[in-house]
Image (cartoon, rainbow, N blue to C red; front, top):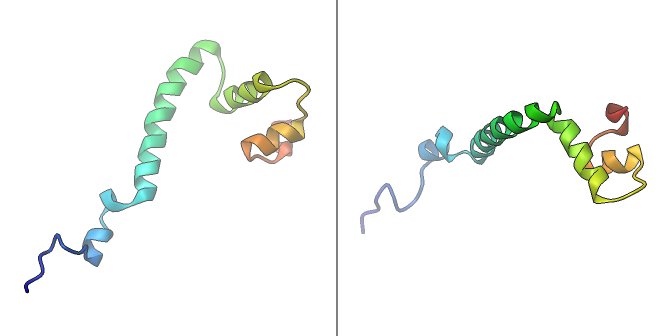
Length: 79
């Protein structure tokens, strides 16, 4: 039985940019960031500042360490 090119992906196809999960995530991130930037500019907030605000809205008495842990950031970058 003869195999076709579509039956199994070959190395050349797997190395194409459109086949890379990292590129799909990168592209989605750029599109999402563009939308958020327009909205957050009206509030004069950066995206990281917005994330901090979201953490603060979720619960009371949050420490800088709590914020860093929740956002996967070193708390030193939040001061």
